[in-house]
Structure formats: C-alpha cells, structure tokens
Length: 273
Ligand SMILES: [Zn+2]
Image 1: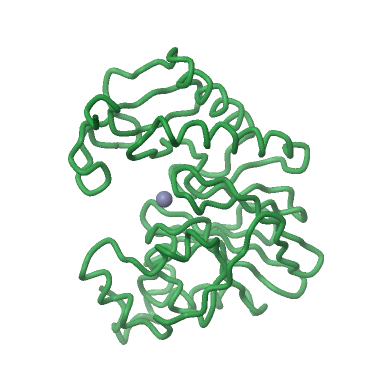
Image 2 (image 1 turned 90 degrees about the vertical axis):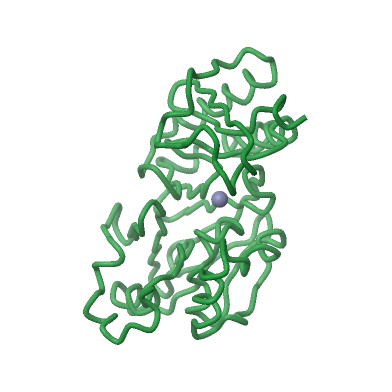
C-alpha cells in the first residue's frame, strides 16, 4: 500500500493517470477505475474516489486550486475508497450504507488509516444540483447495479456521468437479475428522456467517453432480456470478466448477454434458484 509512504509526493502521476477529456473536465484513472474532476468557475466536483491509494487529495489539488466537493456515483468501494481523504462527501442514501465497507480486511485497514475515516456523508437525491459557478451538475437516480446509483448530468459541458450503470465493457448485475433488469430499463428510459441535454457519456470503467448510442443499446438489451430474446454469448469474455467471479457472484456461474455495444454479466438465474 502507498498510504503511509513518505515518497508519495514524488509518485504523483504514477499511481494515477490523468487526462483532460474535455475543457475543464479531467479523467483520473486508477487501474480499471475512472474518476472525473469537473471544474467550474468557483468550485470543482470530484466524481468518485477509486480506492484512494496514494494521496488522492494531493493529486487532485495538483490539478485545480478551486475548492473541491466529492460525490460518489454509488456505494461500491472501488468508487468510495478514497473518500476519507476529504472531510465530507455527497452520495445517495443507499450508497451511504455501503461506502465505508472495504472489499477486504487489508483494504479496510488502509481506509481506517486515511485522514478522515469518519467523513461526513451528505445525502443527495433526484434533482439535487451542484453549482460549481457557471456549471451546474444535476443528480439523477438510476439504481440497478447498485441500489444507490446516481447519474450526474453536467449542464455546463453537456456530459452524463453514469458510474457502473452504463459502460462499454459490461454492466455487472450480480444476482437476482430478474429484479434488476426492470429497474435498469426504467433508468435507461429516464436518461433517454433527457438525452437532448447531453452529448457524451462518461462511465466509470472500460473506456471513456461513449456516444449516446450505448444508452439505446442498453435499453434494447433490457427489453430483449425481459422478452426472453436476448443473445446469450458463448462465454463471458469481454473485458476479461471470468465465468465464475468469486466474491462478486458468490461462486455461481455467470452469463453474458449482448446487444450492439451493450452487455450485461450476471449470475445465471437457474444456477441461483
Ligand atoms: Zn459498482
């Protein structure tokens, strides 16, 4: 772990990659996770904090000198692990229940060693707006992959940040896929209804940015799953997703369905029952 490494300052830019995807919009990558730094005239908004290895705060403050607010797209630890570098964060009610739960004891220890493990959690829901000065970012609830997922609609740069609910590798639906897909479909409809307000989609894994066709492909895939007509792929290969993902699937066999650019991986329902 890098957390207590005195050389961490010298490792800036090594632990994290960063690039300016759009004007005043930075992608910060750690391993397979993308965080985003959205900079307004007065404030900046950090969308997700990955695992928070190294000194994430120092890294982000090296990009902008504006005061930084932190928001999580959902409660999974690969998006919330770096929260304790800050005194407070913004997230949904359901995300707040999971945000401080690391994926393992070693990770939990690293979390507890960060400056603010008792950071304050400010709950946000549909319609909440972050005003960054000349750039407003709106919260849209889209829970399915995680019940507390939110999309963030950046009215300034016309971007939609979707966390893990819409991405180009595969959306992981884990267990109880028959309960999750109807929610996913309703969420895609919620986003399609707003699509005149954004030009590109910025997900949290597997390639960014994406064009809006993905939104429609996911909606079609949702419909096909519910109609029982989805194309089941011969294996789970895509972005290296394993056929049996221990920890994520509890050792149950996984299945992949695909339509256009959209793909779901989930526990085979018959293997669960
Ligand atoms: Zn997730």
